[in-house]
Length: 326
Image (cartoon, rainbow, N blue to C red; front, side, top):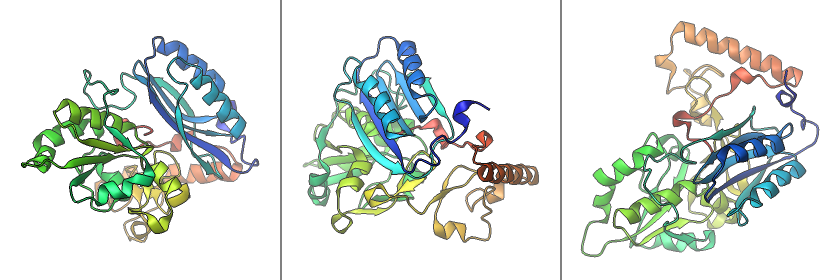
């Protein structure tokens, strides 16, 4: 068993969770990857994606270890103003550490797009006024399974399965929302802000100029906006074992189906078709008996590992499309 396969911080109380991204040029991705991986081990787990266009990731661990990693990132050219959204978790939300080199830090499939030409940031404190304006069209840039967990009141849902589907949706359906003699303002949002950097840049490249996006994403809004003033409805899906969070970034009520890797609500867990660790309403009809037997055995091994205080690596699941952290 590798050193980081045990939960070193199980007795240390709350862990710090840091969600981060920044678009800035990286010349030597392999050197950055090696340095970050070395700084993270053995205490920090999560995912960091490295590309020539920048960094994206969510990591968790003891506060001092997280700050060590973040200080190194901020020392990179162009990363001094790295923005980080913090949360806490009583239990390690990641099974392992992954530091990977990718063509893009969030995959849109538009290689010629310049993410630095993004829309106008709107602070969470000003977001409600913008999206309440009748002259504003609010567009959710996340995927269908994320929007089903929670969304802003009145938002348009493209119902895409992956972010790379967003350009086709806009060209075939979304642009019609903006037709007319007085084109509306466009307000876009996503979990942490990174997808909106590209989505607003994409709309500007398509000729739409009055484009805005929520600074810090849903996570910053939920962190800073009192629930009594909030226009957010539901919870926010996150790409780790917390599954979803609510206002104040407190843990939500959703769990993850280990059969299809989709979020399951409290109501979904009450369904007679739901079997913990095996299947939910979404996937129950598409699983063979062999699949169900395998999933049951995996769930049993996870339970045994939990009792022993170790991580069962075979239980690792990630959402479809390898969307990764936002």
